[in-house]
Length: 465
Image (cartoon, rainbow, N blue to C red; front, top):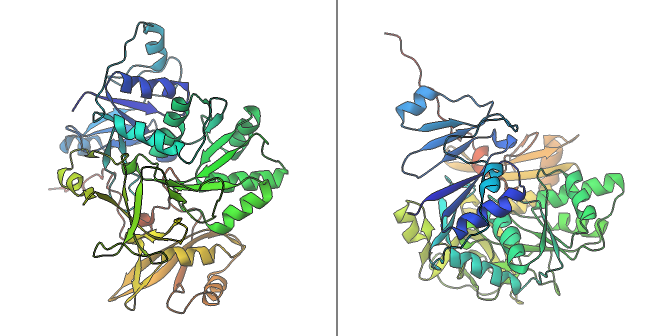
């Protein structure tokens, strides 16, 4: 593999706009990592020749345990102009001051790996996805079939560039189209709204949580969105239909839902602007073949639920140092997404659940998403997640809820009034917040009682002899 350049991006800033494409122009492989306060400023570098941890300032690492496992530890220095750099790194300020304007980009092959991005690890350990030069060029062209991005557009960059959604659909697409990018270093609803107004934004690409926060922020302060805003695009996680309609009714801007994976360089489908269907991930982009199949691999007709499979020039080359998983990535020409869904008579696709999230109760397949959407209809419920918990030989339905001034009994009765007895939750646990990925996707694996964080290096108990 070619030399890897790791871009440590604690905040989204102008350095990212140069560092990431610059590394690709040098024909290096880019791997941007998350370093944020929410993640305790720590990144675990996986599946590489020598393992390492980039540790935040306040994070305590068991150095003896790391040394025993041959894991290198680099502590992130405190920020500041005079602060030290991590070993083997160059500050952007230093790089910019010494750079020459006589630069010739390397002529790359389309199959050369441009970027290694890690999956969110929603259902399993994160894997390093190898995305090629051709993947990114193809993704930018596919988006053009559903979205008209112009040189006069101002795209708000509120999504992080270490995730494929922000990297492919914001950074790469905006640069390819010649559009302006308005950066938001740290996301808050206030910062997002201020940027939309200040820069007369025309395109906002965000995750459902951000749209929900923005709606509540505007409602409380009686604010509006700029009339320059042409597109609002949502992806990265499920967006309940009633919440989409609430945003659109209160702020007067339509939301176009889309769909993509890290393994597909994000872009796969999007609602056409001329006919948006709330709750749908839209229609496949030009050049993408999307089908619904059953367990036997047979394509299903409209209305029937099965697994979503896709064929696209944006599908990744494979996974970093995972040969078996790379061979299984594409079967018979199609990428198996692991998402269950259906398509309607007009060719619009809908996601019902993750295949691994389905609950089997009394021999029936139960959809957690159906139960979650019922819970979200309750006015005192803000967020909900449903899983199946093994109790002896049976799998029982348990809900996790974020809400105020509501009891478990009240919610159980509410669900029984709207769901078949088999689908109603048996227990509800209240949480201050639900564990989520950077794109707002609920990490259901962390809700199970036997969950263990494999990124944590635990100190082995000392045995006194």
